[in-house]
Length: 271
Image 1 (cartoon, rainbow, N blue to C red):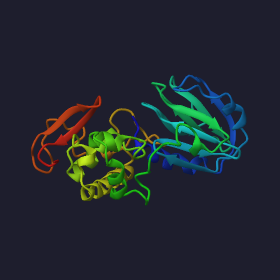
Image 2 (cartoon, one colour):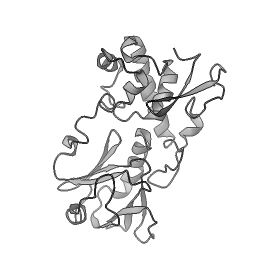
Image 3 (cartoon, rainbow, N blue to C red):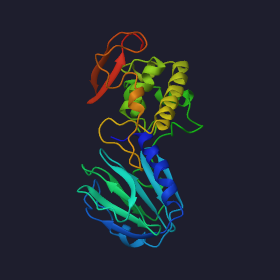
Image 4 (tube, helix red, strand yellow):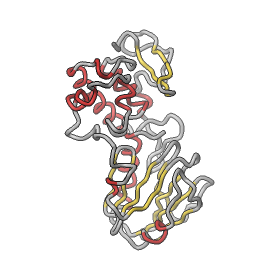
């Protein structure tokens, strides 16, 4: 599933090609995504200019003249910039075609993505209004995490992956950040001290920035908006390295299932 760095990489990749451009046509080949693609997208977005593309958690927000498009890549989705003459593939469900001849193409084999149109403030949409603090924001720090963790017995990995606590920290980067901070993923969130949360907040920020700089992580099928894979996989310290030696101490990296998700950690480096 594309996580925050992949979504941010996509945003940065498509932004130069479509911001300021006018939408000439919207083609919906398959409206049956996680939620049906609204028919209004094909009528109301046409003729409008795209003024900005922002990110909230794992959602992309594309601001037009009189409304916004809310995009989510789901489990297998991607957005690509192609020529409007490029023939669509089997899983290319939606095209937004611009006056400059370029096309923003939504590709989603598993159809768990979202592509919605709203005239209201997208940040107040039910899907977005309860999302937690952005981990790349200046206001994100260990003190915030510490306060939110009090009274929570949930394991720390599940705590930082809770989108109501922190926006967009998915499975790969949660494992990596906890390794960098030296925190065991099964440790109870309420039992972690403030100083360790400060280290964890910096680790989360560091891992996300590093992943974005490498274009995200390609484990299966992620590509950027320009069709390029992400290269952060080459820099992963523990994720997907079960049984291999820890790059810090040499002990075997352990793999467990935690909340039905794979967790990787070093029993020696993480306490």
